[in-house]
Each structure stands twice: as structure tokens, then as C-alpha cells.
Length: 248
Ligand code: 6PG
Image 1 (spheres, rainbow, N blue to C red):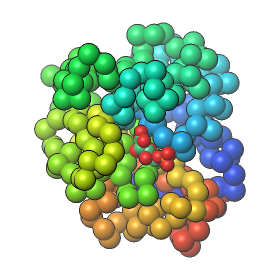
Image 2: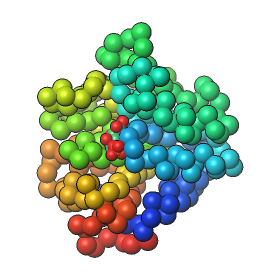
Image 3: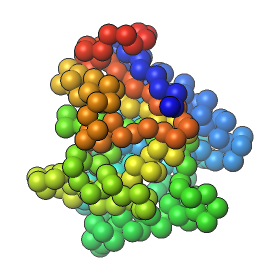
């Protein structure tokens, strides 16, 4: 399969430094080859420390970086649950990224379905899909929920089986969570580099199950890049049940 690496770090600061070093290498290579770097970012609490640290990295090639979202919660932009709101506040308004390089998922004036369709249109036109079959991100950052969801691909929901669309609507099977819009598994698996960030003891069991890949109902276990690199970056609590991983 792909190039899969599991690394357990002593501190979340070490995790952030590792991601930033990868971001630098991957973005430089992408810009050299294609004149721009494409990254899809996740919401949730785990990446906040990384986004804060990234916001001080003024020498990264922000003017040639295009930021997409892996998923968005269908709440107004002003709501603190809105992923772009969080990422803008912590990171994007603090670096010199052109406004047109930030690709939002709309949550106002459109239904969730229309929003997914619009986002897909943005992906089609940006990645010139007539030429390449699926968008191919240089880097996708993902988290894992305690139920094994990633992006907004939840267990036992139709979004997991969609092989045709780039973006779809999603929520939990019992619809206890708000509506969401998410990129699909084929888009994720086409990426050149995928990094899962997982911290905290409450994720130790699920991350072990995902990495062992025995439960195929777990969305995060369905992330298998076609030819890209796959990293699981864990802190010691999240990695507590894994024995043979590299320690940094
Ligand atoms: C979101 C996500 C989601 C997240 C996981 C982990 O918008 O919520 O993109 O997939 O990465 O739920 O969330 P935490 O980092 O908050 O644990």
C-alpha cells in the first residue's frame, strides 16, 4: 500500500513543528512544479495549537497557498462552531494570504445540498477537473472523532459510499449532529500527503482501531491514499495503546 508512518511525540509543540516542516517541504515542491500549493484543513479542537503556531510562520509561501476545508459545519459564519471562522481567526487573517486563495464552504443563503454542490463546482474549476479525474491536494490535514469519523464522514452514512462526488452533505446516522458539508473519500485518497493529528487519551482506543484497520466501518480507516503519504501524528496519550511506533 501507501507510505504509512505512525509517529508518537512527547509534546503537541513537537507535533506542530513536524507538521510545519512537512508543510514547508511539500509547499516548496508543489510551487516549484505547479506554481501553487493546495491544502485542505480540518476543524475541531485538535489542530488549534498547530494553526496558532503556523500563524507566526510568515516566511511560508502564503501568497501561493490555496486553503480549502475538509468539511464545514452548517452553522452561520459568525457561529464559533463554524470551521472557517475558527481557522480565519487563528490563522488566515494573521498571514499574508490573498483573500481569493481561501475557499469557503457556504453556510448562508443556500441549503446544505446547494452548498456541497457549490463547493464541488469550486473544486472542479480550481483543479481543472476536465484534465485530472479528482482534485489532487498536496496536503490534507485530518482529525479523528471518538466514533471514528474523519472530516464529516460519519460511520454508517451514505457519504462513505459516494464515489462520484467531490463534496457531499453529511451528519451522524441518527442525525444528532448538525448538518455538515464534507469532501469525499475519493478526494481524500487522491491527495499527495495526508496527515492525521490525534491527541488525548480519549482517542487512544479509536486511533488504535483505525491504524489496525480491522473495523472497516470506521471512516478514518477508509483513508488509504492511492499513492500519497499517510501520517498519523499522535501525542503520548493518544498513542498509549500502540506499541511499535516511532517515538520523537
Ligand atoms: C470538524 C472536523 C472533524 C474533526 C474531528 C476531531 O469539523 O469537527 O473536521 O472531523 O477533525 O471531529 O475533532 P477534535 O479535534 O475536536 O477532537
